[in-house]
Image (cartoon, rainbow, N blue to C red; front, side, top):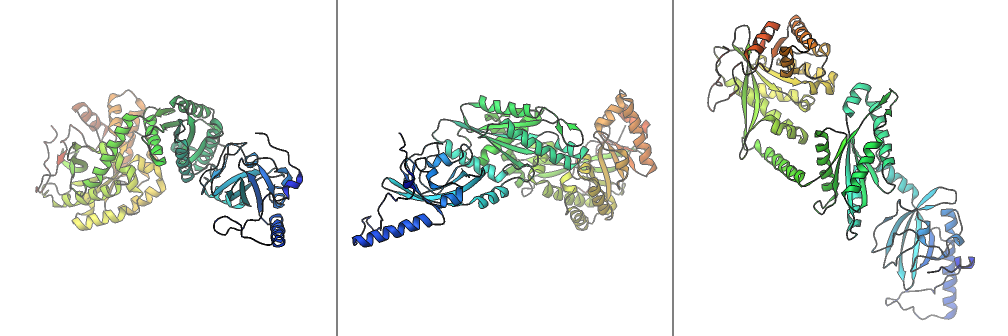
Length: 592
């Protein structure tokens, strides 16, 4: 439809009579002079109003606009006449609609509008900047009567609040809201949308090696590369930590989503410059497509998250599509989480005890409490079956407190008259080690049970130490002040520095079973030297050294020759459960 070229006069001549609604839409009768006076007054009000007022036809073309247009947008009303509202809206980016029934969003034209409408849109200013205007109005007959006010400052503030300060990308809340809106938009369109859950590989190691400032710079650059790798209309957000989200709309099939993921992986191939030298990183990506199964934004993000973890387990630097198999696995995980919440209340948790045997006299000198779950339908579950889930959902803390209390109570009840010095050990997870309530929980377990503190040992592993060595050292000293013993479990398999380890207030070093196996195999001379050095250094500092994974006689002879003090494994007595009503655990036979 052709648009007539109006004269400048159109901007000031009101093309409608004054309407005073009496309830039925019919203007009340009035003298001609009074009607003319009212129209003149209305014209004055229209021309001199502080806000932008406009009249448009049903196709969205401006018919009239007042002088406030110049104050708000920097050009006169004549620049609007004959053009549509959407000629002055920035394409693709940001028209937000709310509060109304319908309004067209196509750039360059405008669909018919019914009833009341609201529109928040970004318009170009004559000085080259942009202004956010909030439009509101209603229709009457063939006219659309609208008013607009400049809300740029409000939108800028809102935008800052909704953005991640490190990457300047939308934060998780904004990303989720955008996804919710996208799900509503795609209904009836025949197209699909996808969420890519992008997790940066190895950020923890980068933080540990070159510092958190460099890690922050890495995240900022990753955000820039993600933004450059996707389409202009796609939304990239930072979901938290090392996690990003990408919302991709108007997809015909999953191959298009896979193409976006490939571009993201490719964008991260080039080294990043962090001021400490170039660093290469990669990402693990999970993709969830809207297929009618996930009915909410949170559901799609969750599905993409599950797929991302699958990508990590398959080797990282790749993408994985969420599928029905993962949905089944996820449901099983949710069922397991529900059951784990109930396990404590149902008394389904039990402790087995792994003996620690002295190589000096071949007697039991310690008992390590091993948590087991007697699941009502799945049988006896090992820690690997449920503790990772407990660490993720926070249940590790109440589980840990139960183990502390139960192990202390059972140890105090044992009538170990022939071995009064047996020490009971409890494993402390990394999350527990930094928990401010740990010392209080240990103190309460000792006081409630009456167990002598010297017969209680807390074992921690490398992942707990590397999180924050200084903080861990302070926590361990606080535990030592209670009189309990401290053991480092799994030494030799990770990255721990022997010097850093020996600076901690520990009583026992437990050599990892893989470290021991490599030592016995003799294929790596450095391993043999390190194990012997650990034993010598430990003895110099009064630290007992326990070899784990001693499952056969050759291994037993090798660690005995290396000077280890104690052993755990199949060559020692097997794990024993605390018998119901028994005074002490049932131990298997002693070393041959």
